[in-house]
Amino acid sequence: MLTLKLITEETEKVIKGLEKKNFKGAAEAVEKAIAIDKERRDAQTQLDATLAESKKYAAEIGKLMKQGMKDEADAAKAEVAKLKAKAAELEQKKAEAETQLTAHLCTMPNIPYDEVPEGHCAEDNWVVKSNLKECVEGVDTVGNWNCNPANDEAKLPHWELAKKYNLIDFDLGVKITGAGFPVYTGKGAQLQRALINFFLSEANKAGYTEIMPPTVVNQASGYGTGQLPDKEGQMYHCEIDDLYLIPTAEVPVTNIYRDVILDEKDLPIKNCAYTQCFRREAGSYGKDVRGLNRLHEFSKIEIVRIDTPEHSAESHKEMLAHVEGLLQKLELPYRILRLCGGDQSFTSAICYDFEVYSEAQGRWLEVSSVSNFDTYQANRLKCRYRNADKKVQLCHTLNGSALALPRIVASILENFQTEKGIRMPKALVPFTGFEYID
Image (tube, rainbow, N blue to C red; front, top):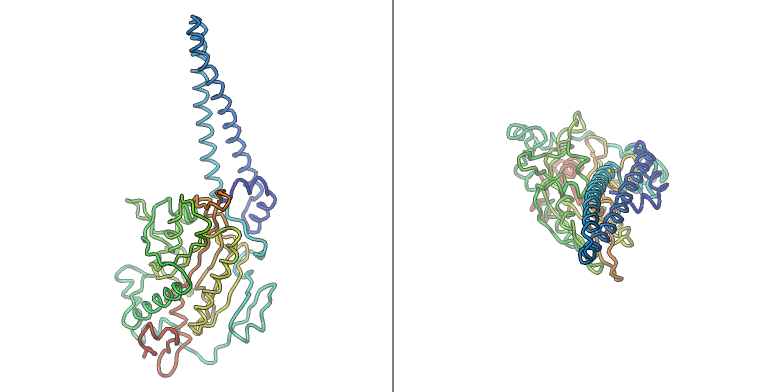
């Protein structure tokens, strides 16, 4: 969540940032936060004064008793009792203000960086790069880019290819669980495993330490990374145990550093993790969710960094280069978008999306989001570091998909169709053990 220091010292910046994220009532929300904090601070000031006065009276009681001034001592005791009762009321008032302030701050999203473009939705995102020549030439660096690569000939969509080559059984998934839970078989399952191992191998080469975390988390973990209380409707909830199935490995991996003070010399910390991910995707329907386009359970490799404020921008660039390198090695058509304020997540300060082109569907499919959260998550997590001057301050947290599998699989199937079968990208062959799906 936003820090009170930022809100009180850079009020106008916060209001403008919230407005860039299309947060309604930005000025009112900031004013309310400042007002609640004033109540808290006033209660603390009164509490300190009351406790000091009570201590002063308590010190006098012994002296009065020694001097035989029992009535005066009894009067002092009565005053101490009143002051203790007042202190208890002020303590409660302060605690209520703190609770109210935290709850209010949780309703306010992170503010975007200056380089984040203005906008309300996906149509306002900026395309900053593509590996498609005909589209690179059409890039508008200050606005939208609507050029799509043309299909030379009609090609089968991945759900038909999956059936043709016995790779994925969507109907069996419905039988076992429900829609959005496919069953991978034969070379479809081998392709999944190959991609997981390829992505983990590349992350290892880039210096990421692999983590194998739980796929269920408690409320504190969901709160720490900002999924709660914002996205509980999109998460699968185990009500009896009050645990949540993770929507991404970002949640358990980042929470490793909850309530931890790190040493600056150990930063940046670089972790990666392969997990199954679970998302209810409530309200999703239509052609955009057909096949592998939008699932309730899917495999994903996540990269997470914990860094200093001074170096986090460089870390973000390195993460973007890592994800782009994966798509280049997979020989896929891709583009990179800088998301506008209105299309960013609740917690991110800046985010870039990677999309691959679906040849058969004639549209772009998101496969990765790489975000810098600044101190927003760290403030909730109490993730801090101690610098060379022994000063303790908040870390920056970053994460990205590297990569999510379903749409990568869809893009490979659709883009590499040949008369011989579906060709595997050269970089993937050592992991699949085969060059073609036929």
